[in-house]
Length: 210
Image 1 (cartoon, rainbow, N blue to C red):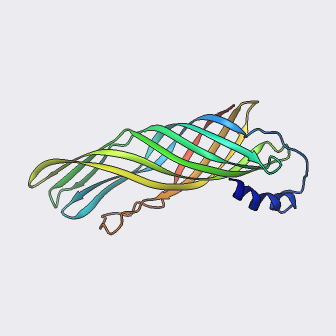
Image 2 (cartoon, one colour):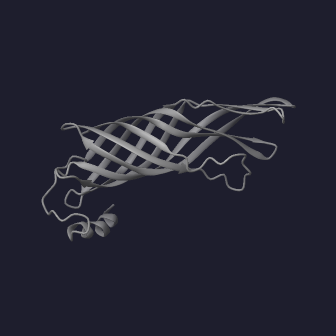
Image 3 (cartoon, rainbow, N blue to C red):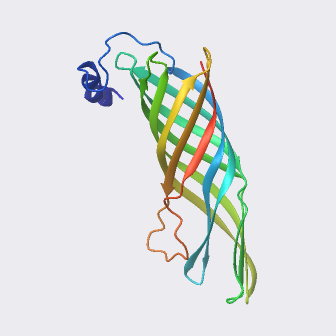
């Protein structure tokens, strides 16, 4: 964080980003909790006959966020880590009657670890625009039915997510925020049946800033 501050802070001080030299209130500094709802790209996978059979849909989610932010560079730069734990309507299905294959993917939880970096803006210097990145993880219980019978697998799915957002205070401690982003998963050399990357995620919620 110190190295990043040394690089970015001089740009802010010399007016590349802001020209106002006044001190800003620390509205985005310290521990915070958040509750967000949204629509996210959910992907389940299964390995059948050497092929990664994927099912994908945009599904509703509810996440509890916990993070700690540092407001530095004359209180104009905000950065810090964030983790989240959530529930998701994550049951998916792949069905191919021509091949006699049906795959059921079952999951209702997710978690993520990442961080944000942003700038305080606005005439009152009380709004935050930021970018975020995190890795979201979900584990699916998979049931495969084909001509050989029925069998089960576990699919641990990880996806890199990134995007941008906007946050502003409603009062002293309560903030509203909203974000839009995308994500991608790396399947290595596996052959997949569909393209699941670069779908949009939408999130909105409240933040309690301590």
